[in-house]
Length: 117
Image 1: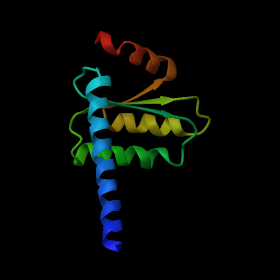
Image 2 (image 1 turned 180 degrees about the vertical axis):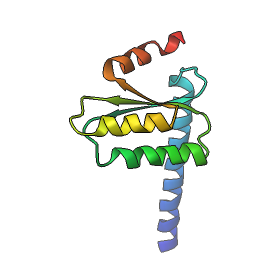
Image 3 (image 1 turned 30 degrees about the vertical axis):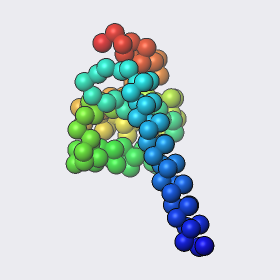
Image 4 (image 1 turned 180 degrees about the horizontal axis):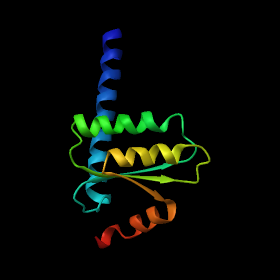
């Protein structure tokens, strides 16, 4: 009896996982119509002085040494930080040419004009 219950739970979880995979594939094929040369990260930050460099370096590690070769650009939008978040991002933009620091208005214009490129 315990075997039957355990197998039932395992099969239910496996079926649920399969349904979620099919839904994800359907969503990606149906709703993402962006045509570009790569993947763009858009990161919005505000007052993250203590965390932003570690976060950005973990992303950079995955891009430079991982399997994320299709990433084209990282756009960081500062939402009016009052700490040193903007200075930290500016320092990273000097070291890595694919990181771009923009204000929110410029980021919105990039998103609005993505189909025109």
